[in-house]
Length: 476
Image 1 (cartoon, rainbow, N blue to C red):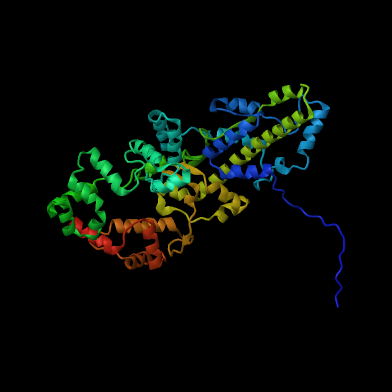
Image 2: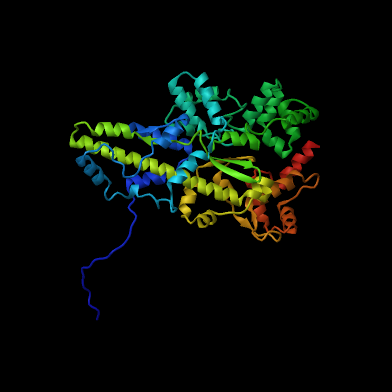
């Protein structure tokens, strides 16, 4: 029979301590530049020893860099206090924080790899808010509503839900929303297709009473119930078809093309440009935050006679400031490193278009750069990249692979969606069912099942074949 006993012993092991500073550094990776700027504004209010630099102060940023062991102007007691504050704190041992080595030379490269970017639609709308809305409370509501706008320009969240989320009365939201709907681009903040169509037709003085009724009954139009629409609108079939032709010329969304969609995104964190035969990847200088520690201020204060608590407060803020600067440098280096690898793998997309998007996963990038997959995930979930083909979220470039006889690496699911879109868009008089689409793709060497075609078609918001047949008959 085995004896159970307690034996006391020593065991050595390595662990990563998730200190508040380390958690803050990880949080920096998750935020895009705009969110990071807002976060740092709050940090600056709490820490008197750090300052945010404007774009014109880059030289000052480089000159103000200090060495890790720089304690100029400190007395022996102050140096000891600073050392004690730093002991046992892994937040400033950040060379391996993001699983890659970092050198001081990289900091200079990051500053060189930044270029300004054009104004985004978010900023354009913000300017209109500042000009046309004077009430401070209504301005706050307007900026809050901007966060709910979809990439195509619609605001599809019901007012009751917005009121609950923002803890604001529905009437106040409706008042602000009525102002926002008058902004450019035309129809921005529209809550549905019907409303957007009416805005366009009203601008062209074509929103007659029968047209208004027709737009309110688009579901009948989709089902081909022309006789019912004749009764509702009080006009003949010929007039109904004439109004349909007018509606066809309208835009389907306030932002309904790739160029407008790229403007709708927040200012990009990364910019890709063509340079001769290569692609240049840079960080966006306009939104990239630059923080320095006010060393001279710290040295001046350290010479004064201060209480022990005051000295401890200054020492902790000085170390926190150094940690923020180091974390920001490593964040920039990591983002740039991941972005360059993504661009390297998606050169065919940049040169030839979406049909040549390379299937890629987070794990692929992580293995190439020898970093953790979660690091790649944190970066790609919130960052945007501007390319000659438009602006995209970084996660756009990651998609599953579908087997292909003509491509050993397989095809990106986004490429297959594009093929389906083109086939339906060019189907002519012969309407293609999901089964026929699947057969065509299989004949082209793309192994995709009918249910997968149906899934992709629905994601593209394309109607099924029987609805497309009705619309085709209606058009004739």
